[in-house]
Structures are given as structure tokens and as C-alpha cells.
Length: 131
Picture 1: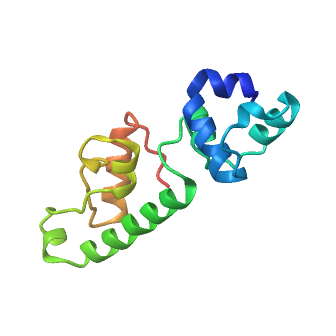
Picture 2: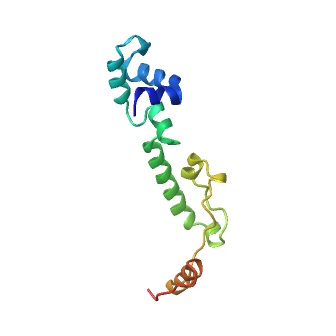
Picture 3: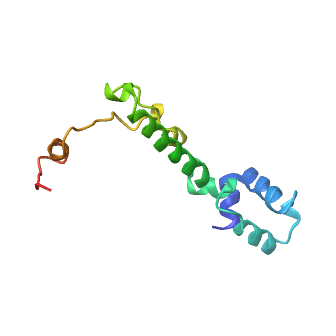
């Protein structure tokens, strides 16, 4: 990643990151090689680096969202709603990714391993190897 690429994507984000990270309010006054080194040294979670990578949120936030989802799902699985197949909590992780409604799809449970394997075979196109 180059300073020029960062500028082309979002000059304002780069300026904010330089000010926040290095306390440089007007990085344009720096010698070009120094500005380029500082830009290259910005952390992965800086505005410009996240924008360049297409990240919707920083890794820590995504991890916390995934933990929240798993905890919510564990609690829901022991509820009356779960026994009736309703009220599954929406996914915070999916909401952060911009997936419609935060849902990853309907939740299906199986009574036996054989029921699961039969459903898996249907989904995969009828291939059932007996495992």
C-alpha cells in the first residue's frame, strides 16, 4: 500500500489517522518519504487501512459480536421459544456485516444423527455416505 493509493481512496481518513496516530495535524508539511513511512505504519484498524481492505468493523468488535451471538444462541437453545422453533436471536455479527435482518437463515434441529445425515444428504444433492 502506498501513500498515493491511500490518498486516492480517502484523503480525509488518512489525515484523521495521521493526526490520531502520530499527532501530525498537517502531514503535507512532512518530507514525502517520512509521510509515506508513517502512512505505511498505520495500524490495521486505522480508518484508511480498514477502508482499503473493505473491513466493516475492527477485528475486536467482530470477535465480541461473535461471542455475543454464541452466548445468545446458547441461552435461546434452553428456552421455550427454541423448543417451538421461534424467536431465535438475531446475529449481531451479521448485522455488523450488513446482512439483512441479522439472520443467517432458519434454525433447524434434528432428533437423531440419522435425521441430520439424511437432511445433509438432501442438501448436498443426495450424496449420503453413511458417516
